[in-house]
Length: 219
Length: 219
Image (cartoon, rainbow over all chains, first blue to last red; front, side, top):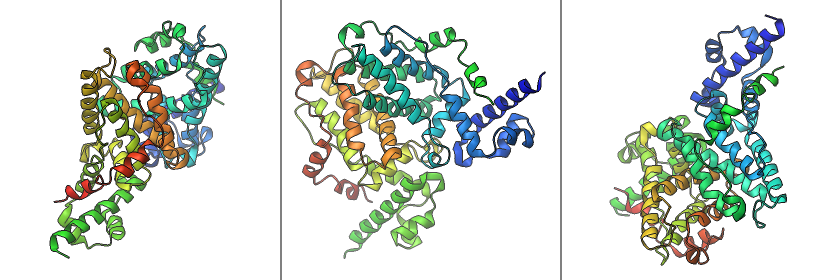
């Protein structure tokens, strides 16, 4: 195995171990020694890739943003797909789950940032394009709706987490979109949108290249 | 001052001090000694009313549910009013703010419960009555929408908390309702609803008796 490939694998193992610990305990209670134990790497190997707990949190957050829905002829469908795909991945990928925990931590935010501003930017950009194409109603303010979806999505996934450990998160996120979409969408587009709870799973099975984004961002 | 009145005041002081500490630090990091210091009461007085940190958290959660919107001829307006009133009170009342922090704490929930199930019940009841009166559309499932609003409300208020310490929470919660209401409401009712961000403040100034519910629940 080439040295570069080994480095990528080690970085990935550390990132996933950190994600498991952050997702379960939150940032403050997480310790580097617990992360080391789960990753099964040496302290030197960990610190070669991430020089602090803060750097680990930043790495997890960067990895989370790598999930992107595939292009679609309707920009609004792309917007919904981003959320449904994230809902599908959330119970399956500790990196994504840790990203949600870290991003919503009031104490943690000043140490390592949050994925929410990046999510709002991506979401507002897609909604702006949807508006330019006449898919959404004239009164909609893309950034306002983008900030709303990031906040509401967080609350709904947390509700599912506390109720049943995310077992029904895809259904709950689909319900969220069912309730939001009629307020922003022109009728001709509304009838063409797919908001089904299993859409995230279908997108995920198509988008085989998505997880490799984690590896691509490795140094 | 009669002994009973002194007891009510002490209980209230302890509850408010506990709320300040829970709202700022969360349940796990909060200590009884910090609560004692802020309340300015003796340890004996505190433990007479609340025999543990758990009991304090339960007391704060019970006090939070006491804010109720006044009756309205449209049940759906009552439903919205509950949320707009809560959004107005949130930055002003540490008991309510602590209730939000405690209710969404994954570790804390097993110790003292959560206000969310009670909110869902109240919300589902109001929506069921709105449906019986023909105010909301036939496909709406009241409990599903009630669970959605409790989750989404939490996420939106947390977004406001992290962005600006709740300074814009009333506007953000109004935006949430603007996005949800068109999907569930019959047209003739839709045009009669008031979703303005300042409605919570107007309701609060009318409902002078509401804060006394906190005192009424004292033992």
